[in-house]
Amino acid sequence: MCHAACHNFTGLVITRFFLGALEASIAPGFSLITGMWYTRRQQPLRYGLWFAGGSIASLFGGLLSYGIGHLDSGLTAWQYLFLIFGAVTALCGIIMLAFLPDTPSKTFWLTPEERSTAINNVTADDQAGTKGSYKMSQVVEALRDPVTWFLSLYTFCVNIANGGLTAFGSLVVQGFGYEGLQALLIQMPTGGAQLCFVIISAVLCSSIPNIRTLTMMGLTLTSLLGMVLMYALEDSNQAGRMAGFCLSLAFSANMPIAMSLVTSNVRGFTKRAVVNASLLVMYCVGNIVGPQFFSVTEAPRYRKGITASLIGFGLGFFWVVCLRLYLQWQNKKRASEVALDVPQEVLLLEDRTDWETPGSQYVL
Image (cartoon, rainbow, N blue to C red; front, side, top):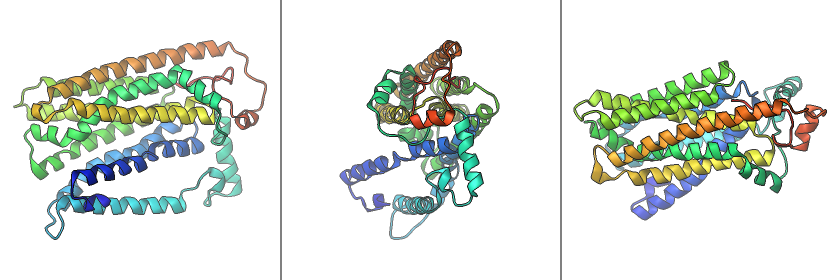
């Protein structure tokens, strides 16, 4: 909401810095909460549902922005946008603070027996605990784990495109022949496309075992195809280039899948936190690097930016292939290991990592 009070570039930069810093808690916080409540089989759908909020915002945000853009009073339209959307966000935050439980054991709408069942379901699903002390050994293990690097490198590569399309999305759409408030409305289909990709991928990954990495590959190739259409089609093919733009956003559905892979596969409280942090750091770095390839001097084609995005999607696909092959190799290797003869509850209390738990299998 403080954006509405800014009158120069310096004020906007400072305000947006704090906006990003405070937003940074959302994805890891939601990820931690999802891991507390749901089994590995249930997680992809739940991740997809809360992640779909961003797609729904794009779907209806354009319509709301269009309406707000016609307000004619003391403030400019962009100031009203920040004040209205900021106030709604703050209200949602207050509601969550009051009603969202820290853990299943503190859930006021469940009976003691139901709370116990909720906790035991997750415990019996061979998942790591949600509480533990900071362990430097787990930090080192996380940095040595190829899973951390494969997921982090994938996240960085595909978010080169995300950074450019987020920062220059409206300008890219204007390059298709749409202008002004019409460009806001025409971005609604992109939100609808994202929503479809998120829901379909979440349902598939929840219904069919071990296809999460395969789904990520498919979505990445779909985005690659969309970028090719944006790059290759003539300027006169307005509908085709817009369809390419919608397809290019398919990769956004991979973020909840990637985070569910971390929650499902990475044991150890500190190790999981480090891996989640690595993904989100690389997400931010990709979004910083991406806009550097998009220059207003190349409007409306943005060939350098689209070329960088194509390379990013190609490399992202490669890293997901590496991740799946590595996890398959690990599962074969672990199948011959003798599992520890220790009750699951004891393992969770000991806060062991996946490397320290012989015989455990990774979700693919």
